[in-house]
Length: 190
Image (cartoon, rainbow, N blue to C red):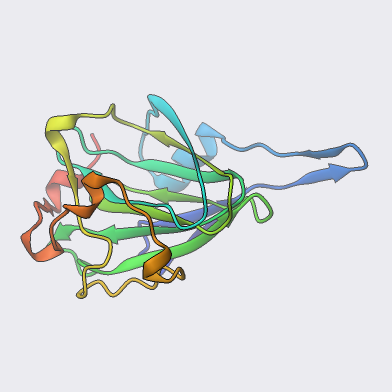
């Protein structure tokens, strides 16, 4: 497995070693020991989630506040997405900045989205299956979000806005300037 930090060092990608032959391929999609060694702290994923979506579906930007803050390890099983993590930790040097990475069934990259980051993705190919692990259960009372087209974030989603489809929840998210945000200590791991 190859771990690569992004321009926001807390967000990183993981590329598994692909063993392929005439029968197909084999990868180790997750190694707890290697992830913890790279992170430098313990992590306990408690739930796996999966979604199937068509081109232009945008899910996000979502996060949960403490005490239910979540880290996510995300990947595409089938298809392609543009995956985005936005730093929502007030006081952070990278507050309001984002990382975007294309994840696909071809490149098999995964992205680690730590606590204190909003997460979202837009689907770039029909019938895309997206999977992710979280280290805290879904908590409706701690659920928060940011509107996907916040002009201060200026995220290039690579899909024309007229082709983007949102849930009713995601059409009502606030701008970053009006959103509940983390302090640096809220995002710490215990």
